Image (cartoon, rainbow, N blue to C red; front, top):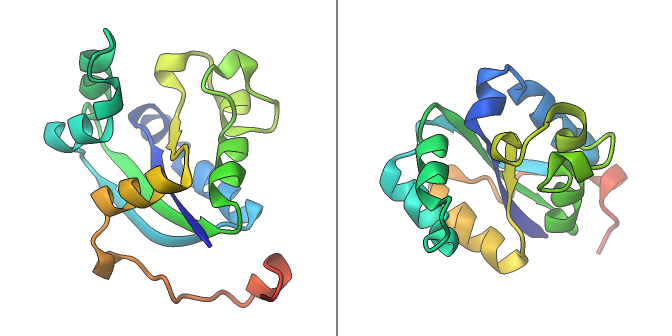
Length: 152
């Protein structure tokens, strides 16, 4: 099972979209193994967005993600990275498919509501940056899992 980190960004929390966003991942079949509301520190934000450090928008991105509470989720499932990213939609909301989170609720890149890990490797790193091992429920099974995941 792959793992991905999802961040419900400040704009989504402020707009009251947290429940709708969580619902979409649950309906997709992804299993929540960690969930918390935090006010991200500047240090953690800079670590999370380090890949963008040399870009001109880095400072504004860090300011934005630390400006209000966010919800962080660790999700697990078959092809979790691809499934989550499809559920989220294109980074540019005007290019996002209708039915995706960004396609339905966002208009601008700088207010695109959700972050999702972009690779299996980054999913593992990002989950570890936001959750200690004892905050995750990796052995948790839902009664619906046999109806979502094929037996292996």
